[in-house]
Image (cartoon, rainbow, N blue to C red; front, side):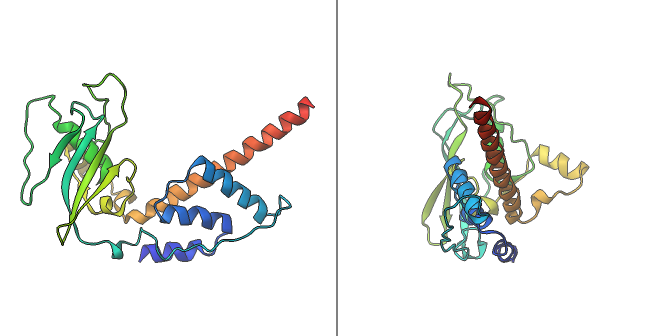
Length: 227
């Protein structure tokens, strides 16, 4: 299983990188404050400061990315849709057990629903969400995504806050844009197992670390020149 291989690789990396990985594998957002904290761990681990490094136990076994622990679910639709094209705020988009047909005149929001679904779930389709035409302010696109398990229990997640939730990785969206892509372009890694996204996020946060270190060095040199 891919997640097992990722964890095995992470456990062989320096501790500061393991801290980044543990947050990512737990689906936690890494904030600027986290980067500062990880940067301090990096300095301690490499003896760049006099403070000793205290390693806290990191638990990768409870990673939410382990899809074997995810229950069977059905997607039941969207609610509280806001900031999307021609869709009025707080609209509801229900999905039935059989076929759900969406129809309407031009400019009523059909493409808007397709675009937000392309952003929530796995898709090669059109993800370009335009601002809400009914609101003066440029509101960030958002929505509640509704799921139902085998026992009939309803669970809601929030887009974009929970955009990497394991549930969203179980649904694929196809539109005319993705159909043209599939017919005219080679297959890409984006349709491979979603755990591969881990490495993109992992490298992105390391780049943030490097940038932070560079900024601190430039700041220190500037202060020396002034003094």
